[in-house]
Length: 299
Image (tube, rainbow, N blue to C red; front, side):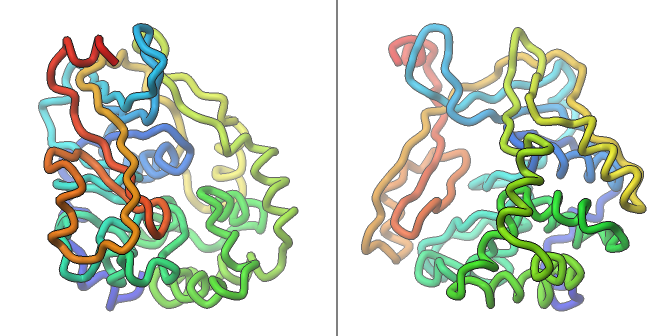
């Protein structure tokens, strides 16, 4: 990552102690990001935050958090989701305008570059994996297969093939993350090449919780083979083997925010939100905790 970008970041990402643990979400971007943080910083996955799960007692999707028995010993760091408060790595747009609330503990290229609803199309459309690959100075000496695998996560390659977004793909990969090799890799390949990679490694797969244990249809073994043999890095992706216990339930809310820009416009969002992101220019998704068990049962 460029020195200018690093200088403006909160410093907790360098705190190589055992006082933190990570929160995993439901896809390869979060899983590989957690593997990087485990290898580089020694932070283990002790929590999961799984989006739009369907509970046994309800056919309405809700968000669920679950923890291992010893998760409360250390402070949590969200990985690939935008916590409203607290430490997290993410890649989403979270602000309506430059006057809006900002989570000062979040490490996010869109916060670094002051991207809000007003300039939504100038967003960082890359993955959390590439953010961490850059931040922790991981290897750039790898084959096209390995680079394409990383670029396919969260479709980081896609904006290159649209003239409107290509300048921003280049800006973030080259000028902010200092990963010109990855941008050059995109230049050498077609969209179909990246789709082949997505299918080959089942990168669209999801992580789920079954009877207290994590399962996935992502091809972890194939991904590990590429990262181990075709890069200079030695970390290994794996799902935690510990049992997870459901801790909290959240209602997923989606709001139309067409025409809203000012900080006061946030009144449309309930104040107890846990995480939030603008998924389109005029749409905000957020999660609010369901605090009463009876309320959960009524869903």
